[in-house]
Length: 481
Image 1 (tube, one colour):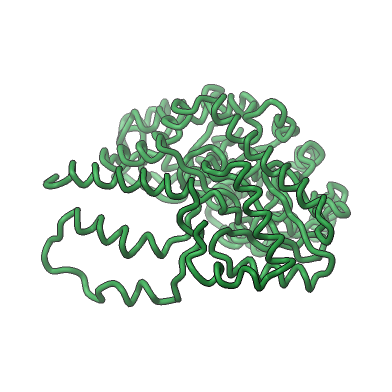
Image 2: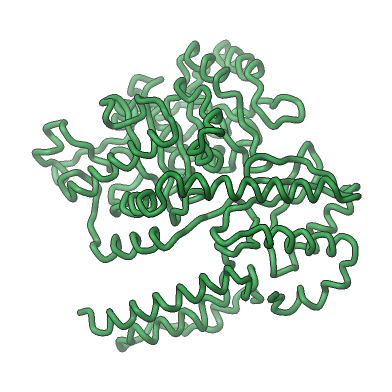
């Protein structure tokens, strides 16, 4: 066991560092030039009968796998939302994998559990979240989930547990309970609603041309449902929508939810990280009225995916909803009620030691470093927004934090630009819809993005729009600059 391991680790480290340097210098394209099925054809159809060396596996990784990847850490990757990483995060994942512990209960790895309690309390403090969201409060606490999708599902289960007083565990949802969100909510929200048995969520209208939930429309929908004999269970408000980074009016929604005894879950997957900076702390306005709150540390905190942090102010509802205690999981620590068993805070039973990489990242960067990374990306987004505003034929549709959305004069021209950008391997933006019109969406978040990247990306976009034939050769080739 371990034959060749140290040498393989040294090789992998050199390869990763060289890869990061190539990304920073834009020496590789963002997207690969491969056709569907190309990797399937390149790999053997049967597993090996004899053992192979770690060196061979590494060689194949860089020769066969890496050329077929989309590079999410590339400075010109401006699509979706960022999925960050950093050397500290990579090191922590390496150590975590090597230790190989199972942290489903305190008793199965006490330090793994207590580290997660400390780290989620640290982050709650850093974001300015209410004291009740911390483990130290005794009422709530945080847990690291794999994604915002899981956070929505867990929050919905807790909401059902509370509103039904436990009845849903035996009788299911019976078609009685309802979830509410806007059409601007991330697609994980309706997906989660289906999974927990609530069916499609009730879509609440947004305030005109804002993408923000209309609290009056929410109140009206809740009144209609109650009169129909239905039970409002959970509202999902979004802080930083996917299309435009709109922020729902959480204070108004929260007051309504308190009046109506409806669980409020705040999905702040992207924008929530910005609250590390005092100047963006207003993004947390009204969060004291929420029952649960989630942010993806893997989006904007230099922490590798997956790392979604979910906090709740009502841990009893959450654990009552999720807890299963067969005899083979019984142990004195759990029975004492003095410890946290994170198996009761998530969907799976088993869980790796999830907190080590967030612990490493927070220590390696410090809050000052994480804040500066966010401010850096916000400045670059503002730079791109200014370039768009000054360019004839382009229109700025949205600009919030690190997100910029824009369009051309006509929808046809915008769709044509989107189509051309999707063939350009040297940058990646994603399409969106703003106020019913197609738009191009760019989000900054790569650890390697610079002001030079902004000018490079903007010139590519302008040339696609003004002289697309000029780019045809580079878009179809390697496109390295």
